[in-house]
Each structure stands twice: as C-alpha cells, then as structure tokens.
Length: 184
Image 1 (tube, rainbow, N blue to C red):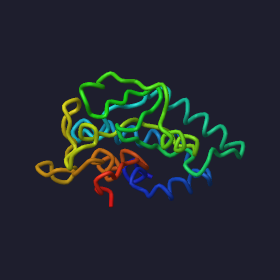
Image 2 (image 1 turned 90 degrees about the vertical axis):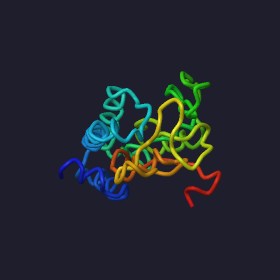
Image 3 (image 1 turned 180 degrees about the vertical axis):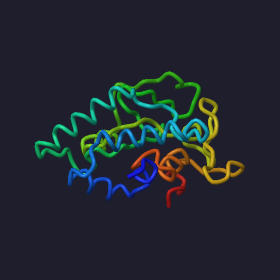
C-alpha cells in the first residue's frame, strides 16, 4: 500500500494488520517518518522528535517479539505522539514555554507510561499553546501549527498539533488535553 494511504488508515486497522503480520512495525514507522518529513516542515505539528535510530531499534524489537507471538498490548507498534504538556522521560518537554525550552524530564506522566506499556512507539511531541492556555496552537518556542487545508486559518487549540498530526497521517494516535473543553 502506498505510504500516505497506509498512514491514513484508522489506528484499529493498522493494529489489525500488525497482529495478522500483514504489516510490520518497521514498515508502519517508516511510512509515518516519511509522512513527517514530507509535511511537518510546513505544518509544524510535531515539535520534538525521538531519535530515528532509537525508534527503528524499538520497531525492530517489536517485530521480533511479534514473530514469536508476543505482543506488547493493544497499541503494539503504533506510532504515537504526545502533547508537549506531557512529561516524557528523556525527551524534551517544553510546555510551549521559553522557561522550559531545554527541559528534559527524568520521568514520564502516567498517561505516557501507560501508552508506552501498551506497545506504542513514541514519535515525539506535538505543538501546543504555552502551558496549554489558549484556543490557538502557537507559542514563543516553536511558533504556530498550520491548518493543513487552509494555512490562512487556525488549526485550533490547545491540542492543535495533535489534531494536525492525526489528520495528515503523521501519527497513528496522539494524546490531547481538555481543560477548556476543546476536545469535546
């Protein structure tokens, strides 16, 4: 299947194909990384990415485990992005604020831990307004996330980076937050 079409499948279909071994975690990761390289420079949805070599090693291990009938949970092999408000151990987490421009937490939030334990591959962090406070996705660290269909319009917020990553197939799943009701 061509790379953009694969990245736009529902996550449930990606997972079904992974479990049936019609698709490998490496193939799925490669498709998403190609999609990120193609679209993210213009859209700015993903603001911090995990080291590609580390991701490839994780995907290879997931494929090896799957070959022996061991799946790591319901998200086994799915490329996932976390909002830049979620502490992710070893990965820069800025909260969209210059105060935390270089912050790399030692621990992950429970949400990140559970998603990773469920077998997901963490791709990186999605853009958000500073401290998630705002209905538009821009901040002084990374700038704006652009609407993929009309760049003169907002992508919304505060989980706009996550929404754009999902809508364009740069991630199979992404988390968001709903303090002000934006996800509802």
